[in-house]
Image (tube, rainbow, N blue to C red):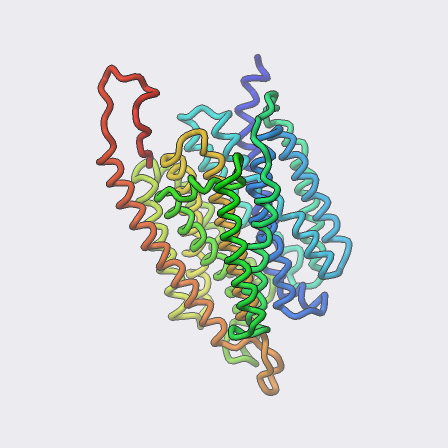
Length: 486
Protein backbone atom coordinates (compact mmCIF):
# COMPACT_ATOMS: atom_id res chain seq x y z
CA UNK A 1 0.00 0.00 0.00
CA UNK A 2 2.86 2.35 0.63
CA UNK A 3 3.95 1.92 -2.96
CA UNK A 4 0.48 2.85 -4.17
CA UNK A 5 0.53 5.99 -2.05
CA UNK A 6 4.05 6.89 -3.12
CA UNK A 7 3.57 6.64 -6.89
CA UNK A 8 1.24 9.64 -7.32
CA UNK A 9 3.60 11.83 -5.29
CA UNK A 10 6.52 10.95 -7.58
CA UNK A 11 4.59 10.88 -10.83
CA UNK A 12 4.09 14.61 -11.47
CA UNK A 13 7.70 15.57 -10.54
CA UNK A 14 8.99 12.82 -12.86
CA UNK A 15 6.81 14.02 -15.73
CA UNK A 16 7.82 17.62 -15.02
CA UNK A 17 11.50 16.64 -15.23
CA UNK A 18 10.83 15.03 -18.61
CA UNK A 19 9.06 18.20 -19.77
CA UNK A 20 12.02 20.26 -18.55
CA UNK A 21 14.44 17.99 -20.42
CA UNK A 22 12.36 18.35 -23.57
CA UNK A 23 12.64 22.12 -23.73
CA UNK A 24 16.27 22.11 -22.63
CA UNK A 25 17.01 20.03 -25.72
CA UNK A 26 14.94 22.48 -27.75
CA UNK A 27 16.63 25.72 -26.65
CA UNK A 28 20.19 24.39 -26.32
CA UNK A 29 20.65 24.68 -30.07
CA UNK A 30 19.18 28.15 -30.63
CA UNK A 31 22.08 30.33 -29.34
CA UNK A 32 24.74 28.25 -31.15
CA UNK A 33 22.92 27.80 -34.47
CA UNK A 34 25.03 30.47 -36.26
CA UNK A 35 28.17 28.77 -34.90
CA UNK A 36 27.07 25.33 -36.15
CA UNK A 37 26.95 26.67 -39.70
CA UNK A 38 30.45 28.15 -39.35
CA UNK A 39 31.99 25.02 -37.83
CA UNK A 40 30.43 22.72 -40.42
CA UNK A 41 31.14 25.26 -43.19
CA UNK A 42 27.60 25.36 -44.52
CA UNK A 43 25.28 28.32 -45.24
CA UNK A 44 22.95 29.46 -42.45
CA UNK A 45 19.93 28.39 -44.54
CA UNK A 46 21.23 24.80 -44.47
CA UNK A 47 22.29 24.93 -40.81
CA UNK A 48 18.72 25.95 -39.96
CA UNK A 49 17.65 22.40 -40.84
CA UNK A 50 19.18 21.37 -37.51
CA UNK A 51 16.13 23.04 -35.96
CA UNK A 52 13.62 22.61 -38.80
CA UNK A 53 14.14 18.84 -39.10
CA UNK A 54 13.79 18.49 -35.34
CA UNK A 55 10.44 20.28 -35.34
CA UNK A 56 9.22 18.50 -38.47
CA UNK A 57 10.00 15.19 -36.77
CA UNK A 58 7.99 16.33 -33.76
CA UNK A 59 5.05 17.28 -35.99
CA UNK A 60 5.00 13.84 -37.62
CA UNK A 61 5.76 11.62 -34.65
CA UNK A 62 3.72 13.33 -31.92
CA UNK A 63 0.35 11.83 -32.97
CA UNK A 64 2.04 8.55 -33.91
CA UNK A 65 3.70 8.16 -30.52
CA UNK A 66 0.41 9.15 -28.87
CA UNK A 67 -1.40 6.33 -30.67
CA UNK A 68 1.33 3.85 -29.73
CA UNK A 69 1.02 4.97 -26.10
CA UNK A 70 -2.76 4.45 -26.24
CA UNK A 71 -2.46 1.02 -27.85
CA UNK A 72 0.38 -0.47 -25.81
CA UNK A 73 1.86 0.81 -22.57
CA UNK A 74 2.55 4.49 -21.86
CA UNK A 75 5.51 3.67 -19.62
CA UNK A 76 7.06 1.44 -22.29
CA UNK A 77 6.56 4.06 -25.01
CA UNK A 78 8.08 6.83 -22.86
CA UNK A 79 11.07 4.58 -22.10
CA UNK A 80 11.66 3.66 -25.76
CA UNK A 81 11.39 7.29 -26.92
CA UNK A 82 13.82 8.43 -24.21
CA UNK A 83 16.33 5.77 -25.31
CA UNK A 84 16.02 6.89 -28.95
CA UNK A 85 16.68 10.50 -27.87
CA UNK A 86 19.78 9.27 -26.03
CA UNK A 87 21.00 7.64 -29.27
CA UNK A 88 20.29 10.84 -31.21
CA UNK A 89 22.23 12.91 -28.68
CA UNK A 90 25.23 10.57 -28.86
CA UNK A 91 25.29 10.65 -32.66
CA UNK A 92 24.97 14.47 -32.73
CA UNK A 93 27.90 14.78 -30.33
CA UNK A 94 30.17 12.29 -32.10
CA UNK A 95 29.75 12.99 -35.84
CA UNK A 96 30.48 16.57 -37.09
CA UNK A 97 28.60 16.28 -40.40
CA UNK A 98 25.47 18.26 -41.27
CA UNK A 99 23.56 15.31 -42.76
CA UNK A 100 24.26 13.11 -39.76
CA UNK A 101 23.47 15.96 -37.36
CA UNK A 102 20.11 16.56 -39.05
CA UNK A 103 19.32 12.82 -38.83
CA UNK A 104 20.24 12.86 -35.14
CA UNK A 105 17.97 15.84 -34.59
CA UNK A 106 15.14 13.89 -36.23
CA UNK A 107 15.59 11.23 -33.53
CA UNK A 108 15.64 13.93 -30.87
CA UNK A 109 12.38 15.31 -32.31
CA UNK A 110 10.61 12.25 -30.88
CA UNK A 111 11.10 13.91 -27.51
CA UNK A 112 8.32 16.42 -28.20
CA UNK A 113 5.78 13.60 -28.42
CA UNK A 114 6.19 12.88 -24.73
CA UNK A 115 4.44 16.06 -23.57
CA UNK A 116 0.91 15.12 -24.77
CA UNK A 117 1.56 11.61 -23.44
CA UNK A 118 2.42 13.20 -20.10
CA UNK A 119 -0.82 15.21 -20.24
CA UNK A 120 -2.77 11.99 -20.87
CA UNK A 121 -0.97 10.26 -17.97
CA UNK A 122 -1.93 13.12 -15.64
CA UNK A 123 -5.53 12.89 -16.82
CA UNK A 124 -5.56 9.13 -16.07
CA UNK A 125 -3.55 8.96 -12.84
CA UNK A 126 -4.04 12.26 -10.99
CA UNK A 127 -7.33 12.99 -9.21
CA UNK A 128 -9.38 15.63 -11.02
CA UNK A 129 -9.17 18.31 -8.27
CA UNK A 130 -5.35 18.16 -8.53
CA UNK A 131 -5.10 18.06 -12.32
CA UNK A 132 -5.08 21.84 -12.80
CA UNK A 133 -2.08 22.20 -10.52
CA UNK A 134 -0.37 19.25 -12.19
CA UNK A 135 -0.82 20.86 -15.62
CA UNK A 136 0.68 24.04 -14.18
CA UNK A 137 3.71 22.11 -12.91
CA UNK A 138 4.21 20.53 -16.36
CA UNK A 139 3.97 23.93 -18.05
CA UNK A 140 6.40 25.39 -15.52
CA UNK A 141 8.76 22.54 -16.35
CA UNK A 142 8.57 23.46 -20.04
CA UNK A 143 9.32 27.11 -19.27
CA UNK A 144 12.13 26.27 -16.82
CA UNK A 145 13.70 23.96 -19.39
CA UNK A 146 13.73 26.73 -21.95
CA UNK A 147 15.51 28.94 -19.44
CA UNK A 148 18.06 26.31 -18.42
CA UNK A 149 18.82 25.40 -22.04
CA UNK A 150 19.82 28.98 -22.79
CA UNK A 151 21.99 29.20 -19.68
CA UNK A 152 23.74 25.91 -20.39
CA UNK A 153 24.39 26.84 -24.03
CA UNK A 154 25.95 30.15 -22.98
CA UNK A 155 28.14 28.50 -20.33
CA UNK A 156 29.25 25.48 -22.37
CA UNK A 157 29.86 27.33 -25.65
CA UNK A 158 30.55 30.98 -24.66
CA UNK A 159 32.48 31.80 -27.82
CA UNK A 160 30.42 29.60 -30.17
CA UNK A 161 33.16 27.00 -30.69
CA UNK A 162 32.67 23.29 -29.92
CA UNK A 163 28.91 23.01 -30.32
CA UNK A 164 29.16 19.25 -29.60
CA UNK A 165 29.33 20.05 -25.87
CA UNK A 166 25.61 20.85 -25.81
CA UNK A 167 24.77 17.40 -27.16
CA UNK A 168 27.00 15.69 -24.61
CA UNK A 169 25.05 17.58 -21.95
CA UNK A 170 21.77 16.47 -23.56
CA UNK A 171 23.01 12.87 -23.56
CA UNK A 172 23.71 12.98 -19.81
CA UNK A 173 20.37 14.62 -19.12
CA UNK A 174 18.37 11.99 -20.99
CA UNK A 175 20.32 9.15 -19.42
CA UNK A 176 19.22 10.57 -16.06
CA UNK A 177 15.60 10.53 -17.27
CA UNK A 178 15.56 6.79 -18.02
CA UNK A 179 15.06 5.61 -14.38
CA UNK A 180 12.20 8.09 -13.97
CA UNK A 181 10.25 6.29 -16.70
CA UNK A 182 9.59 3.48 -14.22
CA UNK A 183 7.65 5.85 -11.95
CA UNK A 184 4.86 5.82 -14.54
CA UNK A 185 2.30 3.10 -13.69
CA UNK A 186 2.32 0.17 -16.09
CA UNK A 187 -0.69 -0.23 -18.37
CA UNK A 188 -1.86 -3.82 -18.03
CA UNK A 189 -4.77 -3.75 -20.48
CA UNK A 190 -3.92 -3.46 -24.16
CA UNK A 191 -6.10 -1.01 -26.10
CA UNK A 192 -7.83 -1.95 -29.35
CA UNK A 193 -6.76 1.36 -30.94
CA UNK A 194 -4.75 0.74 -34.12
CA UNK A 195 -1.90 2.89 -35.42
CA UNK A 196 -2.60 4.79 -38.65
CA UNK A 197 0.75 4.33 -40.40
CA UNK A 198 -0.59 5.50 -43.76
CA UNK A 199 -1.86 8.74 -42.20
CA UNK A 200 1.56 9.34 -40.63
CA UNK A 201 3.27 8.87 -44.00
CA UNK A 202 0.96 11.30 -45.84
CA UNK A 203 1.28 13.85 -43.02
CA UNK A 204 5.08 13.55 -43.29
CA UNK A 205 4.91 14.29 -47.02
CA UNK A 206 2.59 17.29 -46.51
CA UNK A 207 4.66 18.89 -43.74
CA UNK A 208 7.97 18.07 -45.42
CA UNK A 209 6.98 19.73 -48.71
CA UNK A 210 5.65 22.79 -46.87
CA UNK A 211 8.81 23.27 -44.82
CA UNK A 212 11.08 22.58 -47.78
CA UNK A 213 9.31 25.25 -49.84
CA UNK A 214 9.40 27.79 -47.01
CA UNK A 215 13.03 27.21 -46.07
CA UNK A 216 14.33 27.28 -49.65
CA UNK A 217 12.18 30.18 -50.85
CA UNK A 218 14.95 32.66 -50.05
CA UNK A 219 17.38 30.71 -52.22
CA UNK A 220 14.94 29.65 -54.97
CA UNK A 221 12.87 32.82 -54.96
CA UNK A 222 9.16 33.19 -54.26
CA UNK A 223 8.41 33.27 -57.98
CA UNK A 224 10.27 30.04 -58.75
CA UNK A 225 8.54 26.90 -59.97
CA UNK A 226 10.29 24.81 -57.31
CA UNK A 227 8.91 26.89 -54.42
CA UNK A 228 5.33 26.80 -55.64
CA UNK A 229 5.55 23.13 -56.63
CA UNK A 230 6.43 22.34 -53.00
CA UNK A 231 3.53 24.47 -51.75
CA UNK A 232 1.04 22.91 -54.19
CA UNK A 233 2.27 19.43 -53.37
CA UNK A 234 1.86 20.16 -49.66
CA UNK A 235 -1.74 21.34 -50.14
CA UNK A 236 -2.58 18.26 -52.24
CA UNK A 237 -1.02 15.90 -49.68
CA UNK A 238 -2.90 17.66 -46.88
CA UNK A 239 -6.19 17.24 -48.77
CA UNK A 240 -5.46 13.53 -49.29
CA UNK A 241 -4.58 13.22 -45.62
CA UNK A 242 -7.91 14.75 -44.55
CA UNK A 243 -9.76 12.34 -46.84
CA UNK A 244 -7.83 9.41 -45.42
CA UNK A 245 -8.35 10.45 -41.80
CA UNK A 246 -12.12 10.82 -42.34
CA UNK A 247 -12.40 7.21 -43.55
CA UNK A 248 -10.20 5.13 -41.27
CA UNK A 249 -11.59 3.69 -38.02
CA UNK A 250 -8.68 4.86 -35.88
CA UNK A 251 -7.35 8.05 -37.50
CA UNK A 252 -4.01 9.51 -36.58
CA UNK A 253 -5.81 12.78 -35.83
CA UNK A 254 -9.59 12.92 -35.56
CA UNK A 255 -11.10 15.18 -38.21
CA UNK A 256 -14.25 15.43 -36.08
CA UNK A 257 -12.28 16.81 -33.15
CA UNK A 258 -10.31 19.06 -35.49
CA UNK A 259 -13.54 20.59 -36.88
CA UNK A 260 -14.92 21.56 -33.45
CA UNK A 261 -15.13 25.40 -33.31
CA UNK A 262 -13.36 25.75 -29.96
CA UNK A 263 -10.68 23.20 -30.85
CA UNK A 264 -10.14 24.85 -34.22
CA UNK A 265 -9.72 28.30 -32.65
CA UNK A 266 -7.30 26.94 -30.06
CA UNK A 267 -5.21 25.09 -32.62
CA UNK A 268 -4.92 28.03 -35.00
CA UNK A 269 -3.97 30.24 -32.04
CA UNK A 270 -1.35 27.65 -31.10
CA UNK A 271 0.10 27.68 -34.63
CA UNK A 272 0.34 31.48 -34.53
CA UNK A 273 1.89 31.52 -31.05
CA UNK A 274 4.44 28.84 -31.92
CA UNK A 275 5.26 30.69 -35.12
CA UNK A 276 5.67 34.07 -33.41
CA UNK A 277 7.78 32.90 -30.46
CA UNK A 278 10.15 30.89 -32.63
CA UNK A 279 10.49 33.67 -35.17
CA UNK A 280 11.37 36.09 -32.38
CA UNK A 281 13.90 33.55 -31.04
CA UNK A 282 15.51 32.72 -34.37
CA UNK A 283 15.75 36.24 -35.74
CA UNK A 284 16.40 37.88 -32.37
CA UNK A 285 19.39 35.66 -31.60
CA UNK A 286 20.81 36.31 -35.08
CA UNK A 287 20.17 40.06 -34.86
CA UNK A 288 21.96 40.58 -31.54
CA UNK A 289 25.04 38.73 -32.87
CA UNK A 290 25.38 40.94 -35.98
CA UNK A 291 28.59 43.03 -35.59
CA UNK A 292 27.28 46.55 -35.12
CA UNK A 293 30.56 48.27 -35.99
CA UNK A 294 30.76 46.86 -39.51
CA UNK A 295 27.06 46.39 -40.33
CA UNK A 296 25.62 49.60 -38.87
CA UNK A 297 22.91 47.59 -37.07
CA UNK A 298 22.81 44.69 -34.64
CA UNK A 299 24.35 44.59 -31.17
CA UNK A 300 27.57 42.59 -31.64
CA UNK A 301 26.82 40.09 -28.87
CA UNK A 302 28.74 36.86 -28.31
CA UNK A 303 26.95 33.54 -27.86
CA UNK A 304 27.37 33.90 -24.10
CA UNK A 305 25.89 37.42 -24.10
CA UNK A 306 23.07 36.37 -26.42
CA UNK A 307 22.12 33.57 -24.04
CA UNK A 308 22.64 35.25 -20.67
CA UNK A 309 21.81 38.89 -21.41
CA UNK A 310 19.16 38.77 -24.12
CA UNK A 311 17.41 35.39 -23.81
CA UNK A 312 17.72 34.42 -20.15
CA UNK A 313 15.62 37.29 -18.67
CA UNK A 314 12.77 36.35 -20.98
CA UNK A 315 13.07 32.68 -20.07
CA UNK A 316 12.91 33.56 -16.36
CA UNK A 317 9.85 35.75 -16.96
CA UNK A 318 8.23 32.93 -18.91
CA UNK A 319 8.86 30.42 -16.11
CA UNK A 320 7.32 32.78 -13.53
CA UNK A 321 4.32 33.33 -15.81
CA UNK A 322 3.84 29.56 -16.20
CA UNK A 323 3.93 29.06 -12.42
CA UNK A 324 1.39 31.83 -11.89
CA UNK A 325 -0.72 30.71 -14.84
CA UNK A 326 -2.64 28.01 -12.96
CA UNK A 327 -3.86 30.42 -10.28
CA UNK A 328 -4.70 33.08 -12.88
CA UNK A 329 -6.72 30.57 -14.91
CA UNK A 330 -8.63 29.48 -11.79
CA UNK A 331 -9.37 33.13 -11.00
CA UNK A 332 -10.20 34.58 -14.42
CA UNK A 333 -10.78 31.60 -16.71
CA UNK A 334 -8.69 30.17 -19.51
CA UNK A 335 -10.13 32.22 -22.41
CA UNK A 336 -9.54 35.49 -20.55
CA UNK A 337 -5.91 34.53 -19.85
CA UNK A 338 -5.44 33.62 -23.53
CA UNK A 339 -6.70 37.08 -24.49
CA UNK A 340 -4.37 38.78 -21.99
CA UNK A 341 -1.43 36.67 -23.23
CA UNK A 342 -2.12 37.68 -26.82
CA UNK A 343 -2.12 41.35 -25.81
CA UNK A 344 1.25 40.92 -24.07
CA UNK A 345 2.65 39.14 -27.11
CA UNK A 346 1.42 41.83 -29.48
CA UNK A 347 2.99 44.54 -27.31
CA UNK A 348 6.33 42.71 -27.31
CA UNK A 349 6.48 42.01 -31.04
CA UNK A 350 5.22 45.52 -31.78
CA UNK A 351 8.07 46.98 -29.73
CA UNK A 352 10.54 44.78 -31.59
CA UNK A 353 9.18 46.03 -34.91
CA UNK A 354 9.28 49.72 -33.96
CA UNK A 355 12.49 49.81 -31.88
CA UNK A 356 15.47 47.44 -32.06
CA UNK A 357 18.50 49.68 -31.64
CA UNK A 358 19.12 49.32 -27.89
CA UNK A 359 19.73 46.17 -25.81
CA UNK A 360 16.64 46.79 -23.66
CA UNK A 361 14.45 46.81 -26.77
CA UNK A 362 15.42 43.20 -27.52
CA UNK A 363 15.41 42.08 -23.88
CA UNK A 364 11.90 43.43 -23.24
CA UNK A 365 10.50 42.16 -26.53
CA UNK A 366 11.83 38.64 -26.03
CA UNK A 367 10.59 38.65 -22.42
CA UNK A 368 7.09 39.66 -23.53
CA UNK A 369 7.08 36.90 -26.14
CA UNK A 370 8.11 34.34 -23.51
CA UNK A 371 5.45 35.47 -21.02
CA UNK A 372 2.78 35.38 -23.72
CA UNK A 373 3.79 31.92 -24.93
CA UNK A 374 3.97 30.52 -21.37
CA UNK A 375 0.49 31.79 -20.51
CA UNK A 376 -0.95 30.53 -23.80
CA UNK A 377 0.52 27.03 -23.43
CA UNK A 378 -0.49 26.86 -19.75
CA UNK A 379 -4.08 27.90 -20.48
CA UNK A 380 -4.69 25.69 -23.50
CA UNK A 381 -4.83 22.19 -21.85
CA UNK A 382 -7.60 23.03 -19.33
CA UNK A 383 -9.54 25.07 -21.92
CA UNK A 384 -9.18 22.29 -24.45
CA UNK A 385 -10.24 19.63 -21.94
CA UNK A 386 -13.31 21.71 -21.15
CA UNK A 387 -14.49 21.64 -24.77
CA UNK A 388 -14.02 17.92 -25.49
CA UNK A 389 -15.25 14.80 -23.73
CA UNK A 390 -12.91 12.61 -21.68
CA UNK A 391 -12.60 10.00 -24.44
CA UNK A 392 -11.05 12.50 -26.87
CA UNK A 393 -8.84 14.44 -24.44
CA UNK A 394 -5.67 12.60 -25.49
CA UNK A 395 -6.43 13.08 -29.20
CA UNK A 396 -7.19 16.78 -28.72
CA UNK A 397 -4.00 17.45 -26.75
CA UNK A 398 -1.92 15.47 -29.25
CA UNK A 399 -3.41 17.49 -32.09
CA UNK A 400 -2.62 20.71 -30.25
CA UNK A 401 0.99 19.63 -29.77
CA UNK A 402 1.21 18.92 -33.50
CA UNK A 403 -0.03 22.43 -34.36
CA UNK A 404 2.44 23.96 -31.92
CA UNK A 405 5.34 22.10 -33.51
CA UNK A 406 4.10 22.94 -37.00
CA UNK A 407 3.99 26.66 -36.19
CA UNK A 408 7.50 26.54 -34.72
CA UNK A 409 8.85 24.57 -37.68
CA UNK A 410 7.28 27.03 -40.13
CA UNK A 411 8.96 29.89 -38.25
CA UNK A 412 12.40 28.29 -38.52
CA UNK A 413 11.83 27.68 -42.24
CA UNK A 414 10.71 31.28 -42.80
CA UNK A 415 13.67 32.57 -40.79
CA UNK A 416 16.01 30.47 -42.94
CA UNK A 417 14.48 31.90 -46.10
CA UNK A 418 14.69 35.51 -44.88
CA UNK A 419 18.06 35.56 -43.14
CA UNK A 420 20.18 34.94 -46.22
CA UNK A 421 23.52 36.78 -46.12
CA UNK A 422 24.39 38.96 -49.11
CA UNK A 423 27.58 40.77 -50.08
CA UNK A 424 27.67 44.23 -48.49
CA UNK A 425 30.81 45.84 -49.91
CA UNK A 426 33.87 45.65 -47.70
CA UNK A 427 31.74 44.35 -44.79
CA UNK A 428 31.55 40.90 -46.38
CA UNK A 429 28.42 38.76 -46.30
CA UNK A 430 25.76 39.99 -43.87
CA UNK A 431 22.02 39.54 -43.47
CA UNK A 432 20.36 42.81 -44.62
CA UNK A 433 18.55 44.86 -42.01
CA UNK A 434 15.37 44.68 -44.10
CA UNK A 435 15.29 40.88 -43.73
CA UNK A 436 15.23 41.21 -39.95
CA UNK A 437 12.54 43.88 -40.13
CA UNK A 438 10.36 41.65 -42.35
CA UNK A 439 10.63 38.89 -39.75
CA UNK A 440 9.54 41.36 -37.04
CA UNK A 441 6.54 42.29 -39.21
CA UNK A 442 5.54 38.63 -39.56
CA UNK A 443 5.88 38.02 -35.81
CA UNK A 444 3.69 41.05 -35.09
CA UNK A 445 1.09 39.91 -37.61
CA UNK A 446 1.01 36.42 -36.04
CA UNK A 447 0.49 37.78 -32.52
CA UNK A 448 -2.17 40.18 -33.80
CA UNK A 449 -4.07 37.28 -35.37
CA UNK A 450 -3.72 35.34 -32.11
CA UNK A 451 -5.39 38.26 -30.35
CA UNK A 452 -8.34 38.08 -32.76
CA UNK A 453 -8.64 34.31 -32.23
CA UNK A 454 -8.45 34.65 -28.43
CA UNK A 455 -11.22 37.24 -28.50
CA UNK A 456 -13.31 34.91 -30.66
CA UNK A 457 -12.73 32.02 -28.26
CA UNK A 458 -13.78 34.15 -25.28
CA UNK A 459 -17.01 35.14 -27.03
CA UNK A 460 -17.67 31.53 -28.10
CA UNK A 461 -17.09 30.24 -24.53
CA UNK A 462 -19.48 32.83 -23.08
CA UNK A 463 -22.16 32.02 -25.64
CA UNK A 464 -21.92 28.26 -25.19
CA UNK A 465 -21.96 28.63 -21.41
CA UNK A 466 -25.19 30.64 -21.57
CA UNK A 467 -26.84 28.32 -24.08
CA UNK A 468 -26.02 25.09 -22.22
CA UNK A 469 -29.31 23.72 -20.78
CA UNK A 470 -29.40 23.05 -17.07
CA UNK A 471 -30.37 19.51 -16.10
CA UNK A 472 -33.19 18.84 -13.57
CA UNK A 473 -32.02 17.96 -10.07
CA UNK A 474 -33.17 14.36 -10.43
CA UNK A 475 -31.40 13.75 -13.74
CA UNK A 476 -28.50 11.28 -13.60
CA UNK A 477 -25.07 12.81 -13.85
CA UNK A 478 -24.21 10.89 -16.97
CA UNK A 479 -27.23 12.40 -18.80
CA UNK A 480 -26.28 15.99 -18.11
CA UNK A 481 -24.66 18.00 -20.89
CA UNK A 482 -20.93 18.45 -20.54
CA UNK A 483 -20.32 21.92 -19.05
CA UNK A 484 -17.88 24.31 -20.59
CA UNK A 485 -15.01 24.61 -18.13
CA UNK A 486 -12.62 27.49 -18.37
